[in-house]
Amino acid sequence: MVKRRVILVMGMFILLIASHVQATDLYDNFSMEGYGSFMDANPTWSGDLIGGSLSPGTFWLKVDGSGWPSDNPGTPENERWDYIFSNNFTYVASSGTECWDGYFPKQSSGALPTEWRFFMANGDTMGGTCTFVVSIKDLNANGIMEESEYLHKVSSATLIAWINFGGGKFEGFCGNGSFSGDLDLIDEVTMEEKLYVPSPSFGMGMTHLHDTGCSTPTGSMTWGAIKSICK
View 1 (cartoon, rainbow, N blue to C red):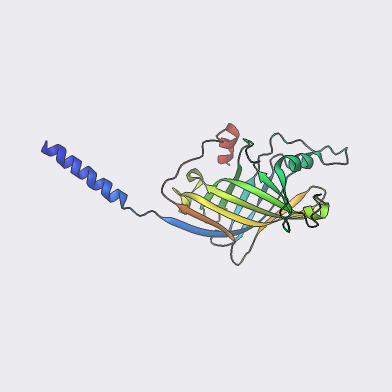
View 2 (cartoon, rainbow, N blue to C red):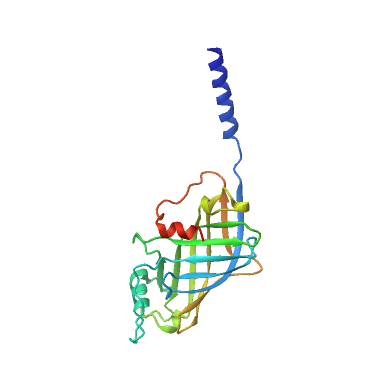
């Protein structure tokens, strides 16, 4: 009986110590510049981390384009973009800020989430899933998207960092983050676009990671998703 009490007291003491262990929080910022296109089979923007505490490094952001049609070069219209615009964008008619907001993945669609990865030059890694939002301003508020309005767009994302993508300094960490920037058309033929999150002097993207309460994603563990982890 005495032995059991000793074990019980020791167990409670260990739990008490564990409950007072301070969680570690990591705050970082970043800016980035990369290129990609909605015309790609799986649209991927990739490039460099050009500013903030996470630079130098590289990144990629990949949208699930499965089920999207290809453009038929023999027709004057772009069937692929027409499909994306019709299915992923909705018009916001707020006076003075009229625009089309596109969500990737489409809200309540069941599509795979957009994925992202950061690879820092010192070997640290970070990544996870996000909702990628592209906004096209309706500059003349006529409800018709014109080519000139598509040239310059605003992009943003809410990031979820999963523990299984963290490495180096971020091993064992998870959390969240966000960014906003520009998405400009740079080639009208290929519809290649430049994704830019300012600025090189002070990164406007932010991440907040912690080493408690972490879990791994379970919703997108298809063979394709597993292969993407290993890249």
